Amino acid sequence: MSKFRVAIIGAGGAGLCAARHFLSRPGLFAPPVVYEQTKYVGGTWVYEEKVGIYDDGMPIHSSMYRDLRTNIPKEVMSFPDFPFEKHLPSFVHHTEVRKYLERYCDHFKMRNHIKFKTTVDAVKPVKVENGWRGLAWDVTSSDGIDPSTSVQRRFDAVLVCNGHFFDPYIPTIPGLQKFTGALIHSHDYRSAEAFAGKSVVLLGAGLSGSDIAMELSKVNAKVVLSHGQKPLKGPLPPGVRQSPPVSKVLDDGTLEFQDGEHARPDVFMLCTGYNFTFPFLDKQVGVKVKEHLVYPLYKFLMPPAFPSLFVVGICRAICPFPHFHIQSQFIMSVLDGSFTLPSQEEMEKDIELDEAARRARGIATRHILKLDSEQWAYNDELARIGGFQPLPPYWSNLYESNKVFRSQDMQNYKTYNYRVVGEKEWMVLGPQGQPLPKPLLKQG
Image (tube, helix red, strand yellow):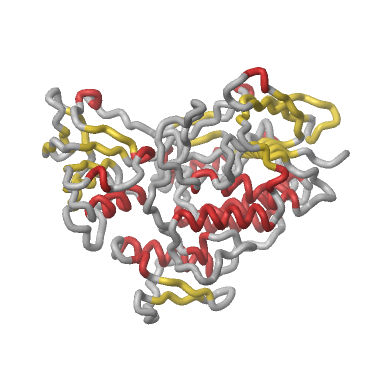
């Protein structure tokens, strides 16, 4: 067989990582073709002050806000084979992550393989006798505006790396259309000044909700952090209080919370996450989305009936770049045969058993992709069955320790700096450079 032809959709962190690994194996893989809708690499890390649509009518996908700093230390946020620059603090501004991805792209000489300002319109499986597992893929692309620019190319494998932080999820709240103040989704939040002195109800206390609450506190907004999780521990910023979720909006525009309390804020901001969307995927591929679960995907990556299509990076509550690094290498182990793919029936059974085991642990459908602390076992399993180097042992411990610090003091944990001192060891320093005790993590 001639060299594998691979298409990669998206030049954010996942797409760049996949391209880097395919380019490292020129004997087996032709240089990948990377399709990127914008004129930049970096995906979600490309900040755009405007919201809505660009001048050419294309949607603005960025959900980045102006003052965002990472909530994961750079020591474990990086790709394992390409560290962040040493002089940077552990928690960097988003502009540094974009620069980092630009450097990664240039270091591994990917730029010439990226088709910028190119939208993928259709990805269709084709039966071919001499194809890998009898399959090939026709990818149709264009400039996204003029249909006459449409081009079709054939590939042996397709990696979908289109991200999942751009299509806002709006929960069903009875009476929402009756809210009379400003209703926005965090996707369109850019900076705090516009909310100075206002009353704001934020729905959702994930990382964005908590972070935006802290930003708004600094401009004297009165913030209600409305959510259904256990109450956040640690001191809250001034002017921020917690409440149960908003259950409905009354006829006069008043918000009613689950405990019967009421509020009439100036702003109702939904920090409720995003939808997965793959509009270009042919229906016969059978990849569906229901309650924030993308299925059926073997190892959260490939549909058993079409195992040369890979949906990369859809797991949530993970350390993204190392996760992409592991997934990309696993995909190569599938395509080069070093991992023997089970039959379609066996893969379907594996998905069924995995989902059943998660449900038995009380995990709801909408949280199946939320790996959180289970990401380390997942990463290690892919490395083991794919026959490649797992992440170093310190990685998970440092990441999980940062989560503990964040839950104890969300206002100050980003002032800490981390140092890796070996395959297994690391240390954490406080704002004055003083060593801090590590949190004791629950085992298992």
